[in-house]
Image (cartoon, rainbow, N blue to C red):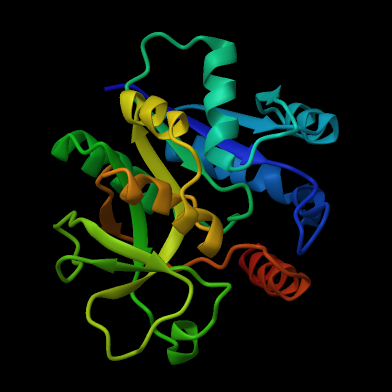
Length: 244
């Protein structure tokens, strides 16, 4: 099966405008994510964006990028436009990797791809174990509730995604910003209107569950922080400088 990774990105993020082009170790966040995706070596990688500055930055750093419309409500709608524009015929799986996760583990990207191929799942994502109790109440960190306890071998279904939950609830994990769609599932997903559940919680994955598209969840080794705020950016910068 052939996989294409598309990374949606835009400068006008509400909480931290301009974040894709913030630099860490001399390279923009979006180009760090692009290079991570390339290093996973599971297929071609492309950035889909509404901003010419992002296209220029990615190309300058050796990547591929395509300009999309500005009026997309979600990243998945944006990656679908990119897929249509480029008219990829022989692609089976499309991975939507969030452009603000420069610490995403390469092995976790590979694992999600392998699980999708092995299980013939329609839509898959990643989650990690929650180590900090404060995460349960933190609305910036999305949680997923799975049907079964998550381990290295299984790929259970997601029951729900939420922004806050109770610690005593069973099978709650930290959701990571990555999705892998079968091509037909992506076409179905974007054909549905945003569901009330999706807009209320600001979580596009709820559109899938609300339209009976099952989402399977693989266990991630690491639990990277995404860049949502200036605090996140400074924390990630520190980690990446230290790794260097």
